[in-house]
Length: 521
Image 1 (tube, helix red, strand yellow):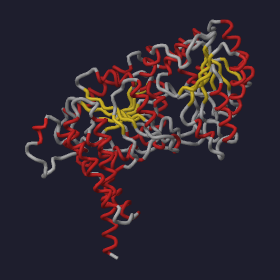
Image 2: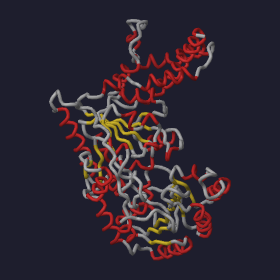
Image 3: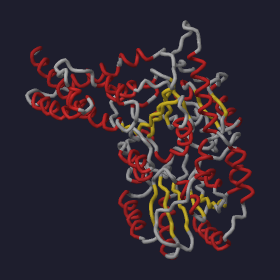
Image 4: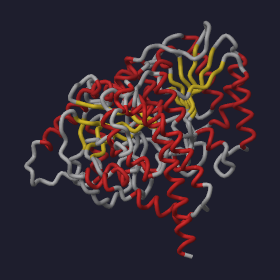
């Protein structure tokens, strides 16, 4: 029996080696995009083999490229060996657990930061790019920072949506140098991130279920974590008697920094996080800068009498925030587009919407009906679907928006154009900030009335709520230079830790205890 286990274990070792070599090959090719890091990453992942000839540099090719050339042959040899043994789930689990306890990660804890400060941004939600893009730009222009952007898979609301392919392609389109890291395995992904030796990691959302296990807070606790909320503001009341994850999450309680737009957001965070709010800093919100400086863009060719944005929220089910009205509004929007062939309509779709509608246990309509609605939309010559990062350009090019969403009720007011809201009667109530934002919105419970109002706004050609829009956006962010303030705070915080006495502990802050949270109305 022991002999059988030994054979199975050897087989699994070989198969794991094949996977590592294949992934390493793709990863290093992506790493080559980032100047100045290739040599270091090479030493981490490809130590010099003892059988390498001493004259290997005489070929004029880098050792890194020579090793990449040999990876395929090594993988094929390992595959041949692996075919001789049997797979063993027990050994697969064993090696995964061994890899998860990463000695390199443990050694990294407590390391003092040094110039240039190494900052990693993990990108799983390309639609939330606007919240971090200005900070990345500022840091990359500063020689005191070394920035690495990494695309990772999305896992919205605990459901796998896609790998990092779509995210990486959109980053490529925007010319953003980045690494790809699609593997969810802790024992592979964590080691790659540790190899970058980051002083700080920014993640895009506080919800652990939005990302796979390799990118959740416990797997990244070898260094400091930071959060820039991807929403401009939280405009909803907390769930009755429950913890508000918009303010209180594992990442909120373990982060080195949480950057907030204004004093009201800090007050909400403080209520959820208890007395300890030392990690929360008011800087303004960089998304406002990103949307304001966006260049006009539009996915449909040719002239149009009017250009309309339709933003559909994914919460078409019940039990969460209950805003999505896609099953009810989609037939009406298809009909509106057909009746207005001289107008163009772009559907801004959250990446989770299709998956919710495809789930018969969650969608209020049959998945086949949802597919039919999408086909009917795609068949029209004057419609399109947009799921990219640069929706600020769509704001600039559009004449109006109709939405059942949440974030757009704040963000589109930056464009200061007519904003039509189709409102579900059973959605989670707005808080005082949400009700303030409603002063800049055309609010309708009847989708037909909303479309009639859209027609009236387009015919008028002016926005009669421009003053409300300006006042609302001004109230949402204390500072206009949020990206610069975030970069400056990161630099000052890391410099302070670098200058701290040698005996001062520099481990990431312990997870703060969750206090009892009273329900807010």
